[in-house]
Image (cartoon, helix red, strand yellow):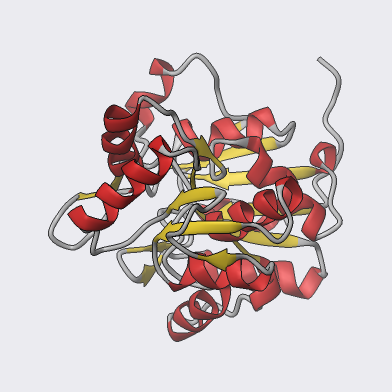
Length: 259
């Protein structure tokens, strides 16, 4: 196997890598500080489409992690970029929060429930039966079905919550139509993110805590991959997957010296 080129840019997942349940993971502040000091291109990624990049910047800053707005890439932004490339100036019926609606407004999309080009499903804490029913009827009438991410559950202090992937499965069952997922593990999210910071996959690395999204997306985008054991994938689970990360480390603290 050919030797990999030195890593010149970094992509990292947020939840489970930099923070856990609203608390920074030890080493996260040093990692972000080192990236900013060296001037290496980087992005903090999240499949969560609820918040805008500005919202996430403020939330991370309150935790002591100074991540500029332009260094945050969400599945909502990736979805908007995809739709802008596919059908500029289109229309969409949206189930989601400000992170998604703002991203679509910013590319000039009109949000409507009257004969939309797309039904776009994102993350929200208030999925309503009425909204899902409307989505089903619009898709049956010809709207294309797009989802920000395939995550079936999301974390909360009380335990797992149904997430976009679970609601998408309900709509698929009712319509017979499978959605297109723009977020991880779709390598499209990684490639559009790399393009946004002017980076190249052969000299980039992806850090994540999930084999089925972060590591798979990084692998398929052609990047080196680092699995941290501070999130959802435990060490005992790694061998269950038909692919492996480039490196396995205990936490983000073990990567600081590589920057």
